[in-house]
Image (cartoon, rainbow, N blue to C red):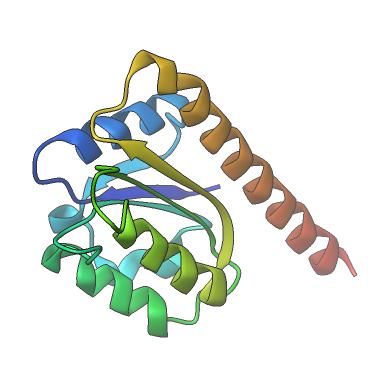
Length: 152
């Protein structure tokens, strides 16, 4: 089950979170957004998107092309998840995660969402593992669904 973890990070918090997620999904491919070819999305069964939030709950400019591609691409069977870092003292804590969540829910098989306050801590590792476990379970269920329909 080919999975990509694609993230954008400015201060390193989202990068560290992406790497922690990758440690629980070592079979996945890890990409910074600038190194991910948007035209390859359809080659994946799973996609995890990581972002921080800019300004007043906005998407960072560098992640917008991925958002727009997923908004129009025909990727309904794609199992997705979104994760991000933010600061709870802002009115729209992890607002970019919420934007991705809503769009992915409408256009893909959204499995899971994770929001972390700034840099993840050791106390967050159980949440990160649960995030990856839920994602893997949804990915497996989607694969089984396709195998059953192909056998008919």
